[in-house]
Image 1: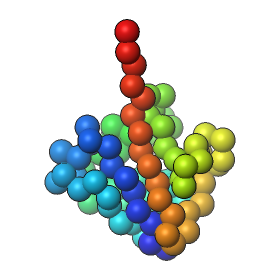
Image 2: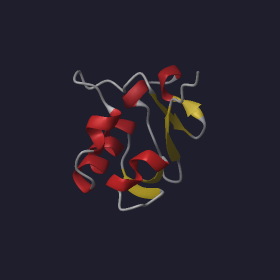
Image 3: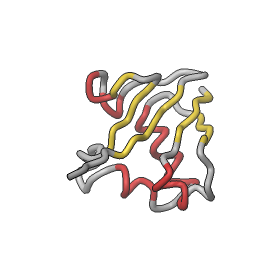
Image 4: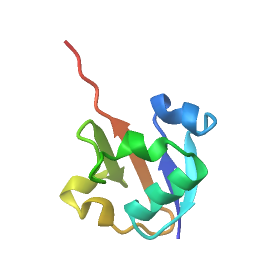
Length: 91
């Protein structure tokens, strides 16, 4: 299943400045594993020490927040787009 992962600007230094990375995965968790295999260090920026998506990271599959779906077990299919969006705080 070929899906695309949209990489936010702050993480592109880990992906050789690639904005869109193609993965062959059936779940968001598998997509994260592939990203880690190709771009070591990216997973620790996305997941906390328990393996959950960090609080300040939002992940969407086709514009649907995975927290309201099946979290990392959210299925993905060919043509889907996973967007990783860091939360932005202001003050």
